[in-house]
Image 1 (cartoon, rainbow over the protein chains, first blue to last red):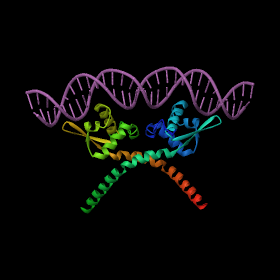
Image 2 (image 1 turned 120 degrees about the horizontal axis):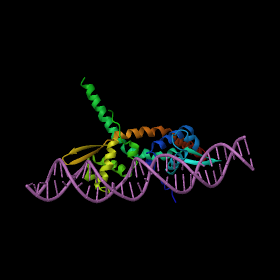
Image 3 (image 1 turned 90 degrees about the vertical axis):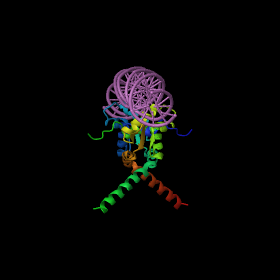
Image 4 (image 1 turned 30 degrees about the horizontal axis):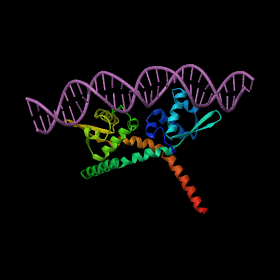
Amino acid sequence: MSSAPKHDVFQAIADPTRRKLLRLLSEKEEMHLTALSKHFPMSRTAVSKHLRILSEAGLVSERKVGRETRYRLQPEALLELKEWLSQYEQFWENKISVLKHFVENEEANE
Amino acid sequence: MSSAPKHDVFQAIADPTRRKLLRLLSEKEEMHLTALSKHFPMSRTAVSKHLRILSEAGLVSERKVGRETRYRLQPEALLELKEWLSQYEQFWENKISVLKHFVENEEANE
DNA sequence: TTAATATGAAACCAAATGGTTTCTTATTAT
DNA sequence: ATAATAAGAAACCATTTGGTTTCATATTAA
């Protein structure tokens, strides 16, 4: 029924090759497999598998055009990550505000 | 020399057990291994290994107190993730602004 | 129509991952 | 002093991961 993703976003972005794929796709709107493969020291087949994982996590979309498969970034899938992160935002905000107080006190003592 | 982390943050948060550990530590300031282990259906040893990985990624700190090892969240390590994410923020902002225009036009047509 | 290109599928492999159990050691409570 | 508790280390194991090579198929160019 619903879109049950086989791979989750966290696992998908864990691999540096896949993060680089996302970066490349963020710069070009749409790219096909062979063009993407040029940027990696591995076989086309390996890159294809990485793209499959990204696709299953909803991070890229695929469409067939003639004999090529073209890939496109699907950045909304990253919102899940953003939301997860926001859980922790208060913590570093606290640390920063503590630091700010410290700095202000130091200045007052000079 | 410098803190060359054996595990990176991306890989560390890829595992759901480790994400749950971070969440638990975000709620309690400091916890020791056995207390953390209670929340998982696996052995203490397994949890200990996960904590080791989080520690190597800089996401938690360990300190020995008597016979216990106490863990503490180190949320600054998540800033790397936040920065990585910000690379893509423009994309969903664009999508949202496109959507906003659409909604405004729809409203204008009613 | 024949050759070249773009890709996917399948079988395979080594290394990494996520778990286990057993054994030791250090610390604390009785 | 002895027993109980907390944890790490080591050896082991099955599954997953990230890669390979080979083969087949569809599309396009000459």
